[in-house]
Length: 171
Image 1: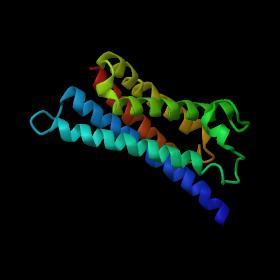
Image 2: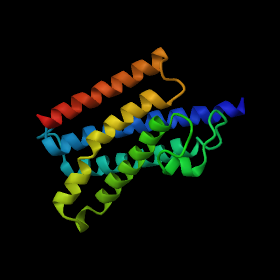
Image 3: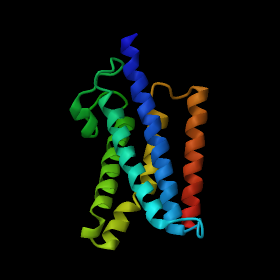
Image 4: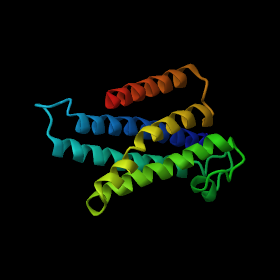
């Protein structure tokens, strides 16, 4: 039974990270578009946006690190941080690795925003939208619970919500 707990931690942390990044993007759209004008307080929204971005990195790291003791797939540290170094669904897992490094770049440059040009920061920050697409593809191709009704419904709800938020941002 203990072997299954790592799988539970891996899936749960991945799903929490996915929800957190969705809310981080939503809050970012609230900040940029000012759709809550009159009710919003940009400093509060920015702090919440940054906090959720940091939590997303933490839960992503938990997701990755709990893969090591999970006996379902034999992962080593290098497989978690270097794309295309594993045998289990190499493209799907590598998208997750690329997504993690993209997330770290976005969050890291946000912490250093005052020390870089606004244009450079903005270009890196706009990678949040393709990152969300990478997460969707990774989630729908890498996990062992892909194809179950519950997970498919959960994934489609998050994917469609993310697409709608991206559409709001474009408009």
